[in-house]
Image (cartoon, rainbow, N blue to C red; front, side, top):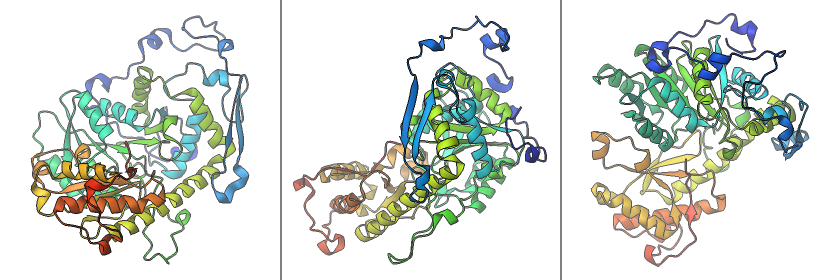
Length: 494
C-alpha cells in the first residue's frame, strides 16, 4: 500500500500498471525475509524477545548538535542549530534511541515523509500507488534496480557514454550493456526504437539505464519533447526506465549572450519535467541522491517507484545495507523538516543552481578563448561537466594519441577525464577516431580555470605537432617537458 500522503489527489489517479512480468524470476513473487515471514510483526502489547536487538541504554550518544548555515543569502533567518535528543523526538524527527536502533529497509519515517512531500511537489507522479524508499546513494540504487530486471547473462540498454560506477555494477552482475546512440540531448529515441526493433538476443531487452539531466559524462540534458519521445519508445517496447538523476536540481539555464548580459534568474526558470512526471504507467524507477545537492559522504538518497517495486527494494535493502545510517537520516530530516523547511530547501537548491551556473559561464567563456581550433563542445544546461571533442589533427587516428595527450597533460599540470572509462564499446565506437575529455567545473577554484585551459591547449598542440601561438592562448607557449607547475585537477571521481 502506498504511503503517499496526497490522498485526495491520489484517489483520482490510476494505479501503476503491473509490470512484474519484466522482473527476473527471483523477484516475480514477493517474498519477505525468512525471519519476518516466520515471526511476523510484533504488536505494542507483546514482550518482544525475538530479535538480537541491543538495549538503547547502551548507546553512548546523549545529544547531537550541528550548526547550520542559511540556505541562501536571502534566507538568513533559517540559519541556526539543529539538535537530536536521546529519548524524545526533536521537532518532526525521531529520538536518537530510534535513529540509532535497527529499523526496516524503507528508511526512517520522518526522512521518508519529507521526501514524499518533496517528490509530490517536484514531480507529481501521475499514478496513485508510488512511494519512496531510502537509499545509500545512487551507485547502490543502480545495483538494486538492475538486479530486479536483469540477471547473469541478460542485457540492459545504456547510453553510449555512461557513468563508470553503473558500468562497474553491470560487470559484477555479469549483465551486458548494449549502447544506444546519443546526440546533444542525450539518448536518440529513433536509435533506441531501431535497437529494440532489431534486437535478436537470447533474452529480451527489459530495461534502459540513463542519466537524462546533466548527463555524466556528456553534460547532455533532454528537452521535454525528447523525454516524451523516449517514454513513448519505452512504452512501445515495454521497457523499464531506470532514471538516474543526481544532477536534476543543478539545471543551469542558458549561457548569457555576453559578459554584460545579466544572468538568468534561475529561481524563475522552471525545471525540465522529469521522466517520473510523465510516467503514466509506473515504468520509471527514479533514483535521487543528496550527494550533489547536500554532501556526498552523507551517503543518502531515495528511490521513487510503484509500491510493488518498493516492496522488493525493501527486501534488497534488508539483505544488504538494511537502510542508510539512521543518524545521517536524522540530521537530514531535522534540517529539511524543521530548520530549513521545504521553502528553505528550495532556496538552497536555487542557490546551488546560481553558483554552478556562474562557474559554468566562466569556464565555457574561457574554453572558447583558449581552445578555439583545438576542441569543440556543446554548452551544458545542467550538471557539472563540459564534454569536449578534442581535435588531434592527423594524430587522431593513432591509437597512442590519447594516452600521449594524457601524459602531456599530466606533465603540464592539469587533469581531466578521458572518454575511455565512460565509453560503452561496440564495433562502430571502437573504430571511431573521435576523442573526448570531460572537464568538471564544480571543484577547482575559479581562478584555476584559466591556467587549466592554457595547460590543456598546450598539451593538445603538442600532440598535433604544432606550436601554440602566444596570441591564441594569451600566454607564452612553453614546451611541455620544461614545465613544472602545480597540478590542477579539473576532474571528478564520479
